[in-house]
Amino acid sequence: MQRKCGSKKQGLWLLVALVLLAFGTAQAAYAETLEDLKEQIKVLQKKIEALEKQQDAAQKERQEIKSNAVTKGKGSGKFNVYLPWADTKVLLGGFAKLDMVASDVSAGDNSDADLYFYPRAIPLESADASAVTRFGAKQSRLYLKTETPTRYGKFKTHIEGDFYGQGGNQVVSNSSSYRLRHAYGELGNLLAGQTWTTFMHIPALPETLDFGGAAGEIFVRQAQIRWTQPFEWGGILFALENAETWLNTSDGNGALTAADDDSIPDMIVRLHYRKSFGDFSLAALGRNLQVDNELGDASTFGGAVSLSGKVPAFGKDDVRFLFNYGNALGRYMYTNFADAALDTQHNEIDAVTQWGGYVAYRHFWLDNLRSSLVYSYGEADNDVALVGDQVNKKFQSAHVNLIWSPVSSVNIGGEYIWGYREIESGEDGDLNRFLFSVKYAF
Image (cartoon, rainbow, N blue to C red; front, side, top):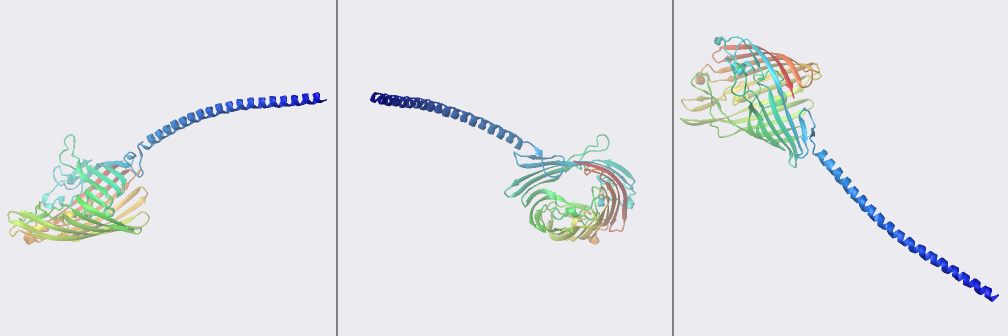
């Protein structure tokens, strides 16, 4: 009995030992397998990380290629692109334009005034000028603009020219030199360079096919430095601009002389008011008129004011107007009267009081068919005793047109122009002209 019990106990302990041995062996094998798995997982993780880095690098490269690609910029213009590496929008534009001009009187041999209306070039009746028809493409234009954001505001540049430069003839090539119109930059509120005078209100200009325009309009491009202070309702503009004194002399032949002796810039301030009911401008001009000749230095101060606006009418129609007055309007008004009269005997400058302006109505017959009717007037109060009776006293002009735009970048139309010129002696002359033009903008 005891032997049997002892055998049972020995068998039990042997079984426990075998179980423990088996468990220990299994645990050791399991531990070895787990370490291998851990090592394999580490290797896989490294490979995944390497693949992710490669994928991120490839994605970044694709993004850089995409971000550095030239794309179309916002706004109008077929050649309007964005350069991401410079954060700059570039606009290349302009137009090609043909003018066919038939006049009942000619402004003179090979004169550009036979292609566009220039009041001073209207021949007097005594000139007995003959009719003339001219074709020309000189008004065709090219410009390049850029725009870049900065911490001081937008940085802009504008370079523009047309082909009304010197040279060329109508014999073979009809070539003509490219000439500067605009060349300026803007940084925030500050503009510097050559562009339209601050005294001029561009939105109020009438729409004419003629390159010249209304006789009494303000029309000057010149070098200047300008500050524009914007407000919610518009802005106030201050400018110093290039001075050039334009004089009638007392020799009695009506000749004009550019003195080119100016030492003080022209000073301009303009209030621009813009609301839904209209776009208005009130400008003031101050000028020191000066000449330095063999008799010494002579100067006088003059000024002028200009009021203009563009007012919505029925539908898309609008009314545009301008009124100028002062004793230093001179070359600032398209009539191009003398700024002043020079008394060559006493070497004194006498400022000439002048006034002028226009009224225009633009009517839309259809969305792509419109007409403008423009009447303009300008007059100077000359001292005949000083400058004689051959100087210009009065100008008038009228434009009426019909313009069709089959697509937004094309204008095709005809325009009738009447011009009138009168000198102090009472002699006068008038002009009747028909203009047909085709303009392709890009």
